[in-house]
Image (cartoon, rainbow, N blue to C red; front, top):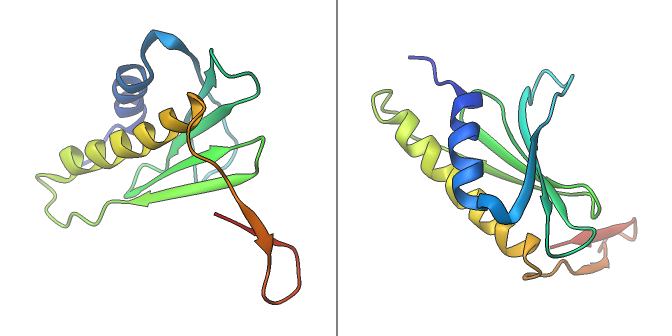
Length: 121
């Protein structure tokens, strides 16, 4: 069974982010993440996310201005229910990003214990 991730993004992204946010398809040359949608906050300047999918069990959200990436993984083994579970995982990821785009949530930084760079959470 093949899941059409482009169609899934086309359903879920507008449903979650609705008319309050600007969305656009993202064309990527990255063979690992060929499908994506850019979502720009209409209420909070400088906030955007890219919601992406690999066509398999991984979904990703990337916040370009913070250089932060969040990944969701669907572990469903049952091929019959895989699309339903994958769509639900994508929806949850989008809902988390909606909170950020509306001004909620925060990213904190601390120095790495190894002394190199920072750790974001």
